[in-house]
Amino acid sequence: MLKKLIKLLPALLIIIALSGLSYYWMTNKPRADRVPPEVSAPLVETIQPTAINHQTAIYAMGTVIPSQSVNLTPRISGLVVSISPNFIEGGMLKKGEQLVQLDPTDYLLTIKQSENELAKAQFNLKLEQGQQAIVKREFQLLGTELTAQEQELVLRKPHLNAAKAALAAAEASLIQAQLNLERTRPFAPFNAIITTRNANIGAWMPAFSTGTPLAKLVGTDSFWINASISVDKLHWLKIPGINSDKGSPVKITYESAWGKNAYRSGIIKRLQAEIEPEGRMAKVIIEVDDPLRQKASNKNSPTLMLGSYVHVELAGNSLTDVIELPETIIHDGHQIWLMTDKKTLDISEISPLWSEQGHIYLSKDQLPDNAEIITSDLPAPVQGMRIKTKDKKVSP
Image (cartoon, rainbow, N blue to C red; front, side, top):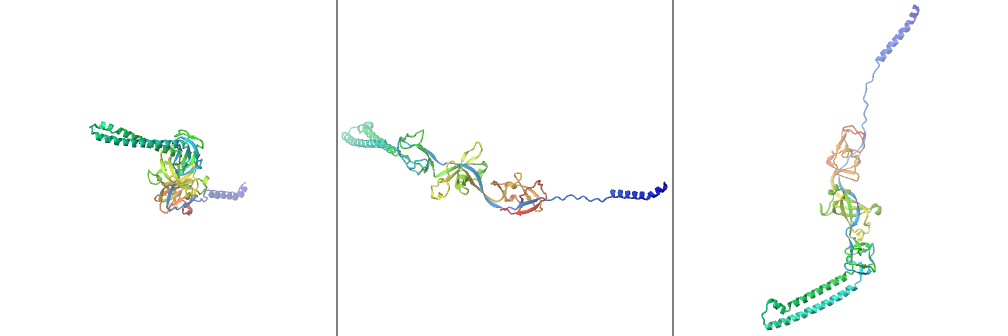
């Protein structure tokens, strides 16, 4: 038994030694120092904007309406015996141009009668003046003392006054008859287009009818556009009678009818007194000269038709030394992201002066010199975080 233990002793010693070494290695194994993971700075794009001068513009929609119109009614009654070639719907009329001819027969007869009455009144006045001379001579020969009232009667002064009054009435009657004859020829009170015609040859037109007029005329020297504008934009415009003698210029486009590049020019005429009850918008009247292209200078311009719903671009006040930025780089409505000289993020507050067509405009003193504005998106922006630049662009 002892011999067997002696034989196994070397093996046991080896096992014990290996176990000790294993325990030592397990309890004293080398440890690597922990190094915090390196945080990668986000990659961004930036622009360096430059100050510009900008003409502001306000964009709106508007409806074309007449600047002047009238329902034309004859001042005397009569039968329509002829019409002008232009007396049709869409017919163009010059100021003073005759529309129709009413039957003048009765009015010519009235003139003849008035002329006869005038001649009779003139004769009676001369006759009475002759009587006056005779009576005055007889009175002087008699030398009779009479009161002033008695002298008037003796000298036939009431007769003379009556003769003069009859003459004045006859003259007025003739003038009235001549006026009525002229009124058998209704004419256009201004340059106009006929939008509605209600009479033809053979029609009886009553004087000052409260029913159907002879025709409806719309002035062609200018049309108006009734445009809706946000109330807070009004102070950017020049409006006659409010803040300027001359209104702001306006560009009118109607792409569906005129094409992409065609336009007409207009000017702000006035501001209506009331705000729209539904949209709470102000109503601005824009005047467009020669909308139907009657002048040679407008022959190549598009025609502006009544009732059209058009786009208007109203020129506002000018901005000087401002920074133009796309609205897409504005955050929370009033912040932009800047990259500092140390390649860190600076979240800066701004107060835009103006916005239009997807851009905002800042006074240049709201940004530091040579500011680099970040145009990229950052998923979790933190003030002072490190960033790096992908590329740099100079804004146009």
